Image 1 (cartoon, rainbow, N blue to C red):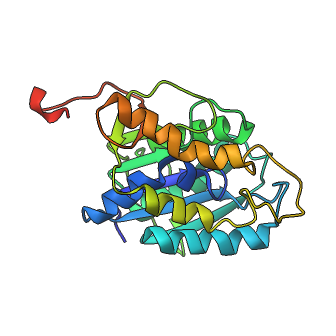
Image 2: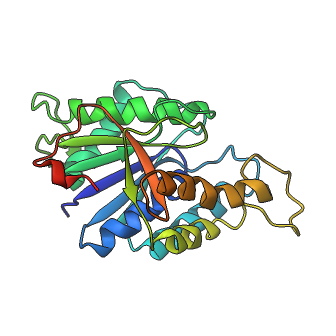
Image 3: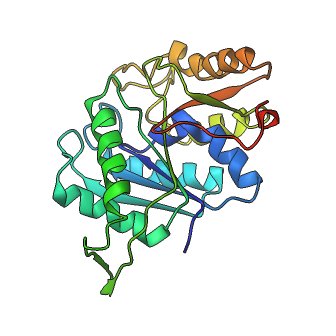
Amino acid sequence: MKLDILVFGAHPDDVELSCGATIAKEISLGKKIGIVDLTRGELGTRGSAELRDEEAADAAEVLGVAIRENLRMRDGFFVNDEKHQLEVIKMIRKYRPEIVICNAIDDRHIDHGKGSKLVSDSCFLSGLRKIETELEGEKQEQWRPKLVYHYIQWKNITPDFVVDVTGFMDKKVESLMAYKSQFYDPNSTEPVTPIATKNFKESILYRAADLGRLINTEYAEGFTVERYLAVNSLADLI
């Protein structure tokens, strides 16, 4: 299956938290989108890997993505080396996306920056025909995405561009609430984490609202780029 956009996250819920509304909007415009999680989030303080598997599947259904896969790398301990790059390359060559979106270039959780560089490097390497990969017994052809974007996570990184996601925040929040074990629940007996507070849950909306304010829309999500943005006309900007 060829996808228009392939989105990577170091952990289940990274993608929904950072660009869930953008995904929902692009799907509404007819784009085929898939998600690949690098780990199962097994080191997470709340819940379990098995529960996260179920939650990720539920969130994917809410967003309406075409596929969701998990590479089962070691949470907290995966590295950007040949072994891990080859696993990411196999996904890129399998789905042949025009655009890849991945973790923030720098963030509070060490896996986010590592995941960002791992996927970015793999996108380049995937285009080299002398790197040979096989999937399910079949040799894969080289493929390099046209564009690699990075979403923004915990840190307030200044975006290179923002996407107007007005009308799609409800879908984003619904996908996030599929991760029942991870977010604020006044009745939960699990330990409190930075994302399991009432303030963080509310910040999802006010952060998007602030970015929207800056472009005269209701809500927006921000991204950084690896090369100059280009437009065909000045009128392409909103």
